[in-house]
Image (cartoon, rainbow, N blue to C red; front, side, top):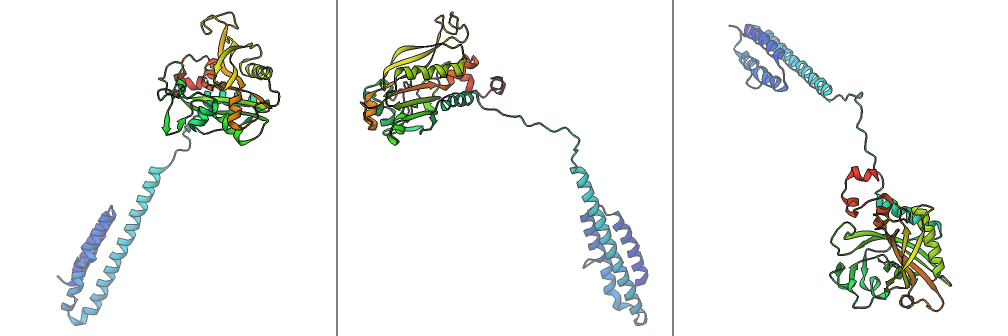
Length: 341
Ligand code: PHE
C-alpha cells in the first residue's frame, strides 16, 4: 500500500476517533495515537524517504496537510469538551433564587443583663455615675479596707476563690467603693455593676458566679433618710408604683447602721402567700451608712463626710421580676425558656 493511501486511512480513522472523544484524556490519547512522537501519521512521515523522488514532494505536502487537519480537529474537539464541562458546572451550581431564605434568628439581651441595665439606668437618672471595677481584687480591697476583721469567716478558703497570694475573685462589688474613693474626693455618687464569685455549691438560690450592683453616695450631710428615699424610688421604678419598702436591721462590717431592704410581696401585695412565705415581704438588698473605718482606709475625713452604700444581687431581682423559682434556669442556655422572659 502506498503512503498516500495509508495517510488517507489514518485521516479517516483519526477523524472518527476524535469525534468520539468525551474527555480531555480521550483527546490526549488520540493525539498520541496519531500525531505523537510514535503516532501513526508521524511514523508515516518518517517513511517519506522511501517514496519515489518524483512524488516525494507532493506526498509530503499531503501528509503535512493531514497532520494539520488532525491537529485542528483535536483542538476544536477539545474546546467543545471544555465548553460542555463549563456549561455542566454552571447548570450544577445554579442557585434557585426563588427559594424562600432561612431567616436568621434575632437574639436579645439576657434577662440578667436587661435587669442590670434597667437598674443602672434608674440610678443614672438620679445622678449616679456608672463605673466598673476588676473581678480579680486585692484581698485588701475586698476585705481589709471594708473593715472585715482578719478572722471573718467569709475570708476562708472555703468561702472565697483565692487566685494568688493576696488576690481573690471579688466576693462582692463593695471593693469598688474603695477604688472609687481612693481615686477622687467627695462628693461621690456611683453605681458599680459587675460579676462576683463565691465558693457556693449551686442550688435554687446560689451560684458560684453572679452579678451585683453596688451603690455609693458620699457627701457632707448624707443621711439615712437619703438612703431610704433613694431606695424607695428604685423600688417603685423597678417593681411598680405600688411597691412599699421597709428596712430590717442587719449587720455588715463596712456599714453602720446596716439594714436589709424588703419590698412588699410582688405576688400578694403584702397579704401573705407562698412566694413571701406568708410574711408579705421580699428581701431585696443590703445597705447602710458607710462605716467611719472605711473612710479612714481611703483617707477621707470621717468627721466631715457621711455616706450610704447598698449592694444588690441582679439575678435575685430578675427572678422576682420574672417569677423565676430557680436561679440556675437563667444560665442553662435554654433558648425556649430565655426567650419567654
Ligand atoms: N456587699 C454586700 C453583700 O455582698 C452588700 C452591701 C453592699 C451591703 C453595700 C451594704 C452596703 O452582701
